[in-house]
Image (cartoon, rainbow, N blue to C red; front, side, top):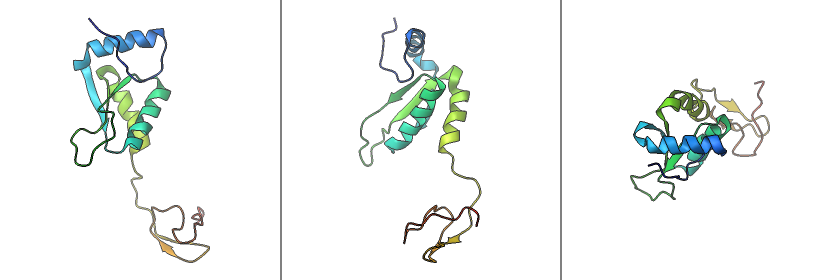
Length: 128
């Protein structure tokens, strides 16, 4: 018998029915994402919410340093491929290295991954 459990995702009658089925077949769930950074978990949860993907978060506590139980996002096997695409869209870093640049305001030399100057706060000139 499936008991209602607090899963995350959009709520309505059909979703709650799906949630109960997913939990009853929890062996068919796959781990989608795990991180020691709560913000990363929040970003993945937000994109899954927007897409209507039902998910479960495990170990949702403040992580302790050195702990082996970081928060994890789990999704049903049937939605895993779609959820992976959504996760990758918000978590992947740019593949190409960006060129270093010089601040147009204070002339400080900065590495390419920075969008603003650490010295004066001026934004990188996108046209450069």
